[in-house]
Image 1: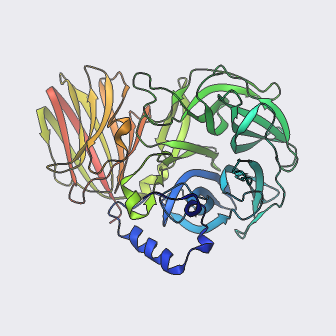
Image 2: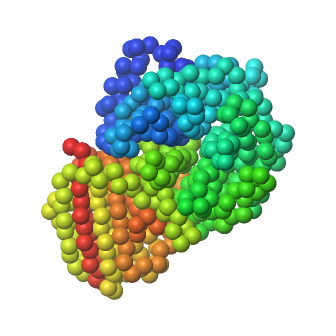
Image 3: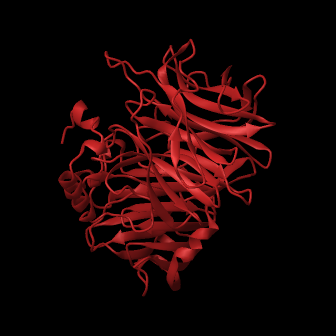
Amino acid sequence: MQWTTAERYTRIEDATKEDLKKLTNQVKACPWRQTYHIQPETGLLNDPNGFSFYNGEYHLFYQWFPLGPVHGIKYWYHTKSKDLVHWENAGIAIHPNDETDSHGAYSGSGIEHNGQLYLMYTGNTRDENWVRHPKQNIAVMNEQGIVSKWKKSVINDVPDGYTDHFRDPKVWEENGLFYAIIGAQRINKTGCVVLYSSPDMESWTFEGEITTSLPRFGYMWECPDYFTVNGQGVLVFSPQGIAPDGDCYHNIYQSGYVLGNLDVHTHTMQHGSFQELDRGFDFYAPQTMEAPDGRRIMVGWMGLPEISYPTDKHGWAHCLTLPREITIENGRLIQRPIRELQSLRGLKAEAAAELHDEVKSFDGFSGTAFELICSFELQDADSCGIEIRASETEKTVITYDALQQKVMVDRTNSGALSDSAYGTVRSCRLEAEQVTFHLFVDSSSLELFVNDGMEVFTSRIFPGAGSTDIRFFANGGQASCNAAKWTIGG
């Protein structure tokens, strides 16, 4: 279905109760609704926003177009949690109904200040010639959960030298000052991030562009995030326009990071090479926050812009990833599922076997929503791995290829495909004699953590309801495996 501009900019307030009920029923009937991931009640979810801890709860907002699976006029939808696992929908937090955000409340971040949660976001506005004019705005949430928008933008104009692709402020506090980085595009159509400072979250000063060693790395940098972990600075961003290179950069757009410390006085950053955060098919626009115990927690959008998905015909699209703890170890960023997710574990099954050039199944190993940890020791096998959501005709295959020293995720036969123009296999290099696959599988997704978070693959999959088998295999020789699986939900 093609959506007209008028349809994309229809507000939920202008939809009829009958249309909303029809859409809700259409979504509920979808066979790929998730069981333990954050997902929209209807319509399209994208970037996580305003991720923060305030007033005893975690707060997470996301971009939302409620009326269909397209990128229309964006609201901020609010969900909250006491444990990062069980989330409660709290309704629309920011309505795009003022001259500062007339065509959408775009992405931004949150920070506690003066006993309230300050939300800094990009207001999308357009003039009579449909020219975009981004504004950086503030909304404030009080202890009762009531959100109030400031009438005036705090950053009203784009600095000289940059186009109107200027958005997604991420704010933090350092030495008594607030700083915000904003994703930008230079007038020569290259991507970068810029830095602002403020003493009070109200009056903002343009400090300048952050100087990096990536002067021509894509045409736009979206959703930047800067933070430190044990004194190590990390700049996360989502560059658009990066060409594939070996196993890297095969999605339409990428998300990744560089390690280095930002000097806010000189707005320079000496850093290492850009590394992809996730090796899978569906990961973009992540955002992090610091938990009360000091952990750095990240959530990403499990989807990508400009890609069609099988849920589109059911009136909804996308979900968020599970929260991940970020650490820096031996000069690289490690992602692990947060420990709180263990509270989801239900019935446990265990198995151990020697695999001799064969495929095996075990009692208790099947399902559509589960956590699975499996370790393989390769003796002389060429490859080993797991098939999930499998049947006679469908399977998603996770392989460690010892000959190529690569981990691969193959969704060629995973069921209904999301946009396959970008291929059906993702891989990355991994040198190991032992490999551990830690999987979180939901009705229509796979999150795979390899060797304790050294690599991560996030992917949507859309198998039939009858594809529930889990199989273990070794090819071209012998490998041993030990596996534990827990049901989730149901």
